[in-house]
Image (tube, rainbow, N blue to C red; front, top):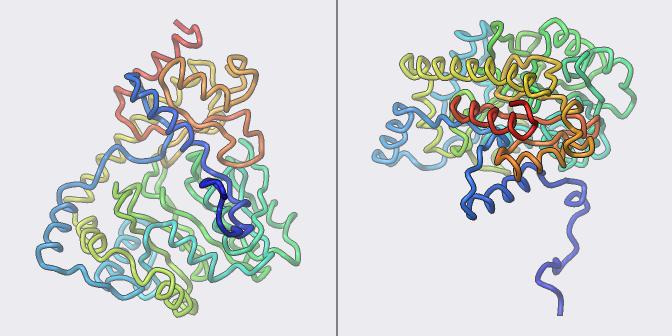
Length: 398
């Protein structure tokens, strides 16, 4: 008799090519400690502690009462696509035809659609290392090959035009970027991003830019990659700036000539994004709701401005100040003697000995993963302050 843990049939090879999230393993360990009565401070998973504001909740309730919960067009509600278009004009000064906007079941569905539309078997896609692990897994799911490019502080942990020019070959199909980035919170400088777009365009490739954290920018007015041409594909989401993680709603902006292909894929793979979430999201763009989001953005900035220097006071190094998202990517080599120079062992020690959850670099690539930890400051400032106190005691900094 087969063990219940063994699959009854052979699994596809792509399953073995996709690694599990180490952060989720830490989260399970943390949950076990909490069941034992330990008080744990979570700075691992990148989820805002803010939830959807009241106008969005009321819009969802109204949609339920009115019964507008049937399937929508595969591209999304026309009113929502228009609202997103107006948001681009107001916040980023870029004109986007609503017809180019594809509403999706979260940014994950958007990236899956983009890879399904653009990546063939064995196509190579350039992306920085470190990066959000799911991005490379979307390429793998499309039977492509992610080419992870070592990117350090000198490059702001981002891909550069020099990387594109050096690594492009007959198998390269395009680039997949994120600005600001998870795990580093760093953006690509607009001039460099424009150079990348031009270099990829000259080679007949695609540029996909994940902009889901762009609303959470702190030090300069953000510049969308859409500013650099209608051939750029961008991914965005209602999860981060709009605080709607579990609502599973995102969008793509695609070139005019690709809308039909994306619509066909969306029809077959997803039918449509949640109708309820779409009707609720219309309230996100009301002036009073935007005011709430902007106040929350400034609160994230306040947390960043506390936690980055606090980490350095604990002995970590923050080689690039994050300018967006809600992450700090910190060099832990100066404190890693606590765990034999291994960020994974260090995060375990911080969890079990201080009750603080952070994430080791191993989740985000193979370039120096033992040297870095990721901290998420998507939690309340008093909790961040308490975490610093606990770690100070652990590291003997008191």
